[in-house]
Image (cartoon, rainbow, N blue to C red; front, side):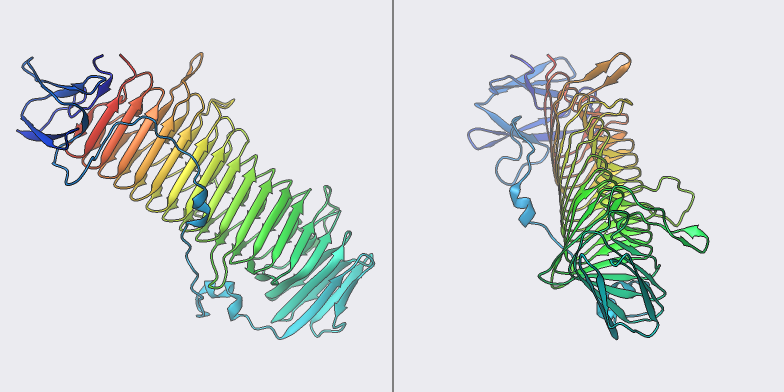
Length: 558
C-alpha cells in the first residue's frame, strides 16, 4: 500500500537549494547506504518498509530494496538509530517528578541600601515580645503594659493592638471559635504562630492594618488554623475611609512567611490569604483548605523561594483563582506547590497596561508545581505578559472547555525544566478552543522537556500567534480529538499552529487528528529530529525547507 508511511527529504514544494546532496539510509542490516542526487525528489516507502522510491524531476523513478528502513539524514549518523517510526507514543504524568526537581536557595541580602534586605527576618532584631493567648472565654496579653503599645478587647475574644514601637514580636497561640486579631502598627513586626486556632464568623481572623512588613513565622512542630465566616460585618473606618478586610488572613503590607510549622487557612467569605502589597513564602507548610475566592491574593508580587534550612510546601483549594497577583509578577524558585481550582490556577491579572512600571510576568526557575483546573476557560498558568521557565517541574491538568495549560499574553520561553500537561475539554461557549500552550507572541524552546496531551475536539497542543523556534529539548505533542464543527465555527485539532516554525535541534514528536503542523510562513528544519503524524490528513500543512536533521511524516490522508 503506497504512501502509508512517507519519509521525506523533499516535502510537497520543498526544493533543495544545494547543487548536490548525499543522504544516508540506515537499514536493518546495520549499514548505511548512501544516495547522491542533485534533483528535487521525494522518498516514499511502502507499509512493509521494503522498497524505497526516489522520484526525480525528469519524471524517472529510482528504486532500491532493503529489509527495513529505520532512518534517513543529510549527514551520516555517528551511532545507532537516530529516527525510527513509532506512532504509539503517549504523554502521562511521571510520579518521579515530585522527587526530581531543582530548587534555588536564597541568598540573604544584608545590605540595608537594597530594598530586598527587608524581606529577611535574619536581618530583624526583636527587642520586645508580647504573648497573646486565645481561649473560648477570653484573650490574654502578656505583659499587660508595654511602652508605645496599647490594646483593647471587644466581647472578650476580639483583640485590637495599636503600636508605634519597633523591633516587636507577637507570639499567638490558643483556641477560639469566635475571636479575631487586628493590629495597627507604624513599624514592621514579627507575628509568630505558636499553635493558634482562630475563627472569626464575621470577618478576618487576622487583619493587619499596617503597610509595613509582617514576618509571619510558623513555629516548628506547631499546627495553626485560621477561618473566617460567610458574611463579614461592616468594616471600621480609618481616616474617613472603610478599612479593607479581604480575607481570612489579610494585611495591608507585605507578608513574609518562614518557619517550619503548618498554617491551615479556610475562607468562606473572601480570599484565604491576602496582601495589598506582596507575599513571599520562604519556608513553612501552608494549606488553603478551602477559599470562597482566591487561595492567595496579592497586589504587587508573589514569590516562592527556599531558605537554606528548608523549602516551603503550599497546597491550595479554591473556588476563585489559586494564586492571583493583581499588579505585579510571580516568581517561583523552589517549593512543592499544588493548586486545585475551578478558575485560574496561577495568574497575573493586570490587563490595563496603563502603568509601564507594572510587569505582570510569570517566571518559574525551580520547584515542583502541580495545577488542576476544572472550570470553563480555566488557565492553569496565565501570564498577562511574558512567561519564562528556566527550571523546575510543572504538571498541569485542565478539564474545562476552552481551558489552557500555559497562557502567555506576550512571549513564552522554555530554557530548562519540565512541563507535562493533560488538557481535556472542547470549545468553550464563546468559541475559545482548548490548548496546551497558548502564546500571543513568540514561543521559544531552548532546552526543556515538554509533553502535552490534548484530547478535546478542536484542541491544539501549541497555538502561537507569533513564531515557534525550537533549538533543543524533547517535545512530545498530542492533539488527537476530532475537529470541532459548529456551523461557521470550525476548529481543527492540530499539534502546532503558528506564524512560522523553525527547528534547529532537539527531538519533536507530534501526532494530531487533523494536519499536525500548520504555519503561515512555512517550516524550517536545520537540525534535530522531527516526527509529524496525522490521523486524517497530511502531516504537514505547509511548505518545508530542510537543510539538516531528520524528518519523518505519516499521512492519514490517502
